[in-house]
Amino acid sequence: MNNITKNIIIRNATLEDIEIIVDFNLNLAAETENKSLNKLILAEGVRKILLDKNKGFYVLAILDNKIVGQLMITYEWSDWRNSYFWWIQSVYVLPQFRKSGIFKLLFNHIKVLAIKQNNVCGLRLYTDKDNINAMNAYKNLGMHQSNYLLFELEFNKNN
Picture 1 (tube, rainbow, N blue to C red):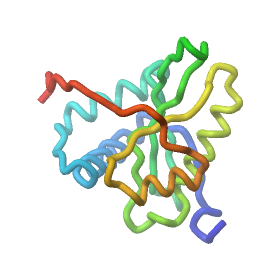
Picture 2 (cartoon, rainbow, N blue to C red):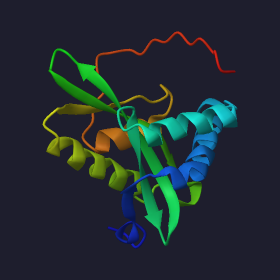
Picture 3 (cartoon, rainbow, N blue to C red):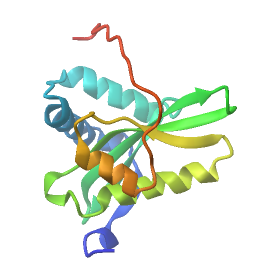
Picture 4 (spheres, one colour):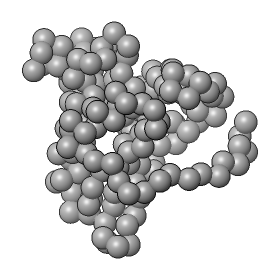
């Protein structure tokens, strides 16, 4: 552990954290997909997950009482396994703290939580096909590329 990560506290997000989570997600969309999200819709989406644990939850990395990183977990039911995959989403670490091990702390925290659950069979995430740094980080944490390709059909009802 380096000087930064040894002082990190990991905790679940609460409604009081909504503003910073929204800001992190706005930055994430701009940096990774060059997208401008509707802040009001985003804030309502974050609020709903914070109020409804059935949708998922956010985990935050705190350094000196300042939120420096986050990730969100959502759930996918696997009938094949009779348990859930936890999807890691909305990963964001402030630029000045990247490559310091904060994501690794968040990931390991989630991994431990998931293993303790009787109804979680694994962790999944997706990344941009060109994001080599992220792919290397995930591989270094023991993840591997699956055989599945991701397809989507987006309806844009809220834009």
